[in-house]
Length: 365
Ligand code: ADE
Ligand code: ZN
Image 1 (tube, rainbow, N blue to C red):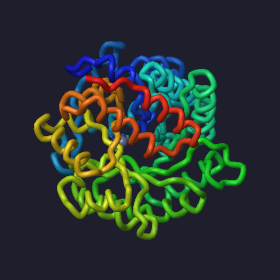
Image 2 (image 1 turned 120 degrees about the vertical axis):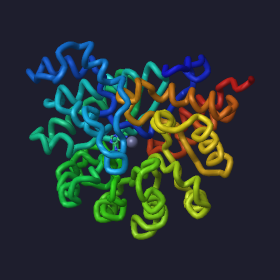
Image 3 (image 1 turned 45 degrees about the vertical axis):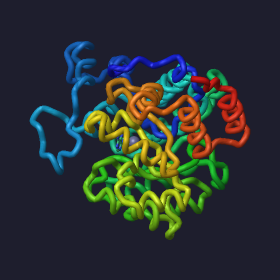
């Protein structure tokens, strides 16, 4: 795994994943299969060419760094992958493949993000997306023992009105207090390109979701332009000044006391994805930064983001990275896993079972 072997201890640790984009788990193999199933021509002559395209380092901040000819941006590559997803069965297969992988990695519970707008804007019916994920949510729990509650993301680089319309369309699949809601998603999030798209633009979406009894989280990408201002909005301004319930990434809070103290005071946890940052940040800079946040008392948990577009590093690989490079003890790693249980929006019974499992983990060094 990206230069590190996953230890038996990390592999066996019961896990909770709170930051994974389901579309970012599409493997080259499933993409190839779905392209054939749907008679879609991919811009790769062979499967090997497709696979090789996943090994490249993508351009992450074209607005800041300029475009590199021939190199897609990260999000271009991500949305290009979505092209092969067309039918209810495709979305089901994608989600079940992820949940099967969860079972193999000892992930007991997950809260995957989905981007409904990425599909409806291509003409895919919302029902295909939502029914596919809903069926996988049920089968994942019944057949694999992997429970999940999903998060509908607003695409922040699309018009706000389009996001609100997507929410209205997806609402019958929500949980919370939505009458007759099918229980797929329990929260809304905010994803895609954050460039000049601060969280407060989506305040109406957050308050609508909150009024429906849903949870609210939002991305504050690491190293984005205006990242500290975005964090300020996410901690102190959204939801009529209550702040977000969680923040996805948010690592830049470490730079400013007002921000990290705000996270502590308001009990806002961060869903970190270390490998995502490690692709572009030196080991000696990144892991001490993560460690400092934890030592100051900010609640953090470890996740994967878009594993197939991030060198096939999944939650276990991300945990191995902090275990190795932050120098955390086994006890501290169990605490990180426990933080994810604290931060998650699972049923109390499921949380209880995972806490019990974690209590039994052997932490002798
Ligand atoms: N949507 C999917 N992956 C994302 C990422 N890494 N950052 C922002 N939005 C995303
Ligand atoms: Zn993310």
